[in-house]
Image (cartoon, rainbow, N blue to C red):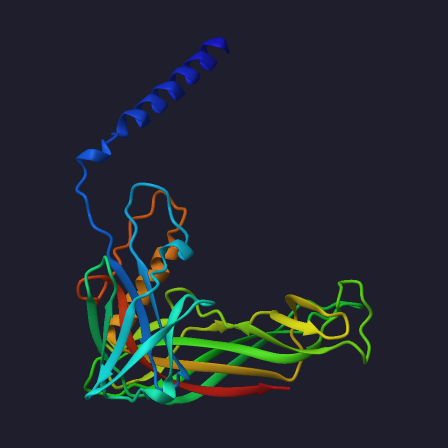
Length: 322
């Protein structure tokens, strides 16, 4: 028995030594010095009421990881232009983005928009995008399953949705599916509080889960066909946040939904840059904290910098569940 244990211990030590030998330390001074670049993220849509663009700086691989607040670049000049018209975005300190009222610079399908960002200490960057046409949602397929119920327990229903739309033929199209459900319900101020007519009615909202990769669809090998999205799951608990004037406190959390339930499903027709960038971001999030995952190369269409400047058009269909 001692011999077996000693042999096993020796084997473990050999494996650990082999793993250590696979690690090669590199002197940071031998690595090329790369200057920090501007990272620009902005997405234009005719449905937007506010134009928003984030500007930050890239981080090197070595060294401490900075937070978003450290990476945010203030004092930049952010300009959008199209067909001789321009608008300069102002910095919004609360959200750390550059914004402008969309009424000052309406976004229209079929038009091309350019962006230019300049700030001291960085190379001036630019990009452009063309807004796709909208594709109407033809139908929302709603399915339901009864959840567990017993003599004193009624857990209600679980709902799933799928979007149906007609793909325009003859051109390559890219789509992203998104949606949410909302309802009005009385929320107790504390978990043990009694619910009565004085309990505040609050708007609750839950994001429909279509899957990290399933939410992205292209018409490759199905050009001009009737497309069907992946199945999206309506959550059983919705998020809420409200201020109660009676107690002068803010309450937030999640709570079971209540009927009637309003379900909104949107089909976003995106340009290719939007599609590739956001799909890569989802792949990156899937592999987070996984030491065995392959690195995900993030695409960019920002000349002189990093990030994505893209356009999309959204169409939405609403279903009411009573």
